[in-house]
Image (cartoon, rainbow, N blue to C red):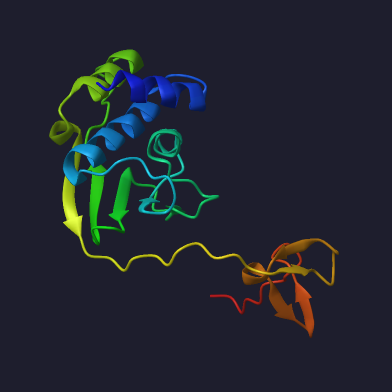
Length: 175
C-alpha cells in the first residue's frame, strides 16, 4: 500500500472507507501499469464510470478534476476507470473486479483492497477511444426566463428565447 496516497486521499475525502481504498488502488494501478505521474494540467485524463468515494482519491492523488476538465463522468454505475495519457497517446481501462460478499468486515475488505496486488483487484486493459478535446472556456449567457447566467454550451433555444436547462421544458411525445 502507498501510505502517502492513502493519507492524501483520506484528508481530501474526510474518512476511510472501502470505496476510497478502491480509488487509491486504481491510482497505484495507473502509475504501475501506465508509468504516469499525477497530472498538473490536462496531460492525464480520467473517465470515471461512477460518482462514488474512489473518485475523490483520483482527484486528490492524480490531479484529475472536473474543474480542470480532465475528469469526465460517464454514468454507467460500474467501478470502471479509463485513464488517457495524452503525451503517450494511449489509454487503459481499470475495472474493479473484487466485491465484498459480506464475508469480510468493511475494515477487512478495505485492508484487502489496499494491500493486494493490483492485478488481484483490477482487470487492466489497453483501450482505443477518441481522446477528449481539452477543456474549453465558453461564453456566459443570461437565461431570458429566470435571469441566471449559465455556460453557453448548456443553454437552449425555446420559443425564441435563450433558456437555461432548469427553465427548458423538454418536449416528449411519449412511448
